[in-house]
Structure formats: structure tokens, C-alpha cells
Image: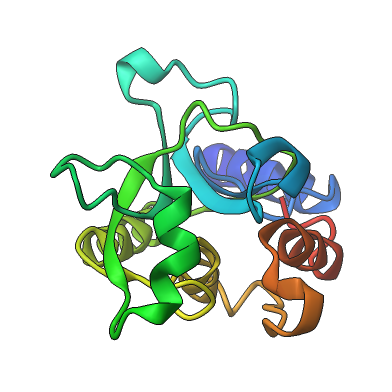
Length: 184
């Protein structure tokens, strides 16, 4: 029995000394698509899952990606509309929003964070609350969604304020990434 405990202690010490800050099969990746790629103002979204990020087999449900979009009002399905996103500030309360499956969206920058199963479930819970929220550019948009998810990890992350040119998703994500180096 003492040998087993000693082995576990040695494994734990090895993990601490090897620079690995967090061991878990669960991850969340904060992602952005740059303005030049998205033909709009850019886009921010998250990917979550188990295993290695960006190598998950999407057919088996190992990874999911979510981004908030302004919904196309002519269709009940979640079809993103960049035009509606641009006009959303002119509508009281915004326009209908929807979480879209961003699994095939280009990723220009990302920041990966390992998380516990409990944290993974908290992310899933926040995702559920955003499924029927309205969309309003700069106050309840794709970046607002990503920031709310990041705040779940405020005990491990430095969350930058959203001001100035950091209102663009890619610039904000680069700042989040630079403030939290090495927290994979």
C-alpha cells in the first residue's frame, strides 16, 4: 500500500516539476477569425471538448464549437447574417441571436485552456443560457459571449477589458492570449 501511495506522489511531483499547470482531458479554446478572413469585423467563438484541441473527431462528438450570431429573420433556423449583425445596434434590444456551430470556421488565433469536468459543465451551462439571447453588436455579440465564458475561469485567467480597438474579436483574443501565456 505504501508503494502505491509513493508512486502516486512521485507522479504528482513529476507533473508539477515538468511545468504542466493543469492535467485534464477537457479543454476550452477561445478562438478568433480575423477581419481579413471573415469578410466582416472578425468573429470570436469557443471550442470545447475532450482530448487534443483541433484534432478531435467531430463525427464522434469529441469537440464542439459555438459562436453567437445575429439570426437571419427570414429563416427560423440558425443561419448567421452579417448584415443583421451590422444593423443590430439600431434595434431596441437587438435582433434575435443564435449560437451557431462554428466547427468549420477559420481560426486565426486561439488560446487553449485545460479545465476540470466541473468547469466543463459550467461552460455547457452558460452555453445553454446563450442559445436564445438577442444579438446586439458591441453589447451582446460573439465577443461578449466569449468574454462571459472566459470569466468562468477568472481564478486562472486575466480577463482584459473590452475597450478601444480591442472591440474587434481578433485583437481582443490576442490580448487575452498575451496576458495569460503558458496557461495551457
